[in-house]
Amino acid sequence: MKKNVFVSILSVWIFLFTTVPSWATLNVVTTTPDLASIAKEIGGTFIQTDSLVKGYQDAHFMQPKPSYLVKMNRADLLIYQGLELEIGWLPVLLNGARNPDIRPGQPGHLNASDRIAALEIPKGEVDRSMGDVHPYGNPHYNLDPENGFILARVIGDKLSELDPENASQYKLNLDSFNKKLQEKLAQWKNQMSPFQGKEIVTYHKHWSYFSKRFGLSVIDTIELKPGVSPSVKHLSALTETMIRQKIKLILQANYIDSKFSNIVAEKTGATVLPLPVFVGGTPDAKDYFSLFDTIIEKISHVLQSNS
Image 1 (cartoon, helix red, strand yellow):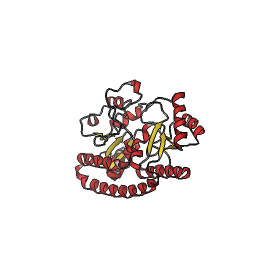
Image 2 (cartoon, one colour; image 1 turned 90 degrees about the vertical axis):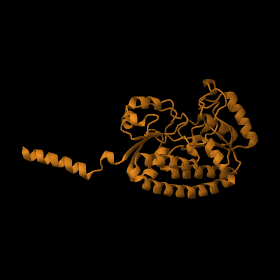
Image 3 (cartoon, helix red, strand yellow; image 1 turned 180 degrees about the vertical axis):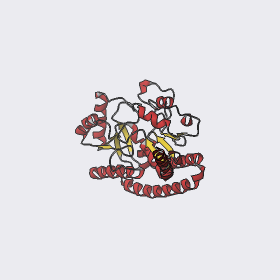
């Protein structure tokens, strides 16, 4: 009997001292996989990351799940995209997670959009007649790769605040991330340079930041208003415009049904190009860098083919 107790105690001690205890790393929960990817680049082996939204899901319309509550309850840091992208579901999870460390105003709460220069901030009052308009601006800033510098810096600052002992390593990882992103940006801008001023149509306003960064001109959206399906009148007018201006590309997130885009494409000869808008949206978009490799390769291929 004593021997069995000794073996049990010894097994516990071996487990405790030969495995990495949960408190040895920061448990970081993000709302989107892009934030998780950048956090992992900066945090390295000192953090564990988990994204609530998967790359193939629409972050506007997530259903709160008990498993999300468990993850948030155990989190040391919550990083969310902000600009009310997650307004329909994140407040519910924050209230239900019972984790005071990640509530607004606490060290473990990080709104990643705080230093982002938001586009399309509406003027005047916002109401439901305008569609799914975000009063603080377009939340899809992750699709401008230059915003990756800002996101990496705010995440690095927060990790250093929560874990000052490893701040020097976070700084080294941040420098490495910035260097790689700078090199990739030069590559991506070179790939997109032949298409400066090219007019395109998008389904939703996912592509405003991307288009501004790379010089594309979005003349309209398939949606009548943000989040509102198009009317026959809107599709007819859009079709006439695309034919008149010889617009041959329709961009949309790959989780969106293509039926309305296909209707317009059939009448205009345009290509409908579904693309990932988050890391993990397709198997080849496995991190923040390969996400843009994938997007830019596919866009440049279609624009080159239609030129």
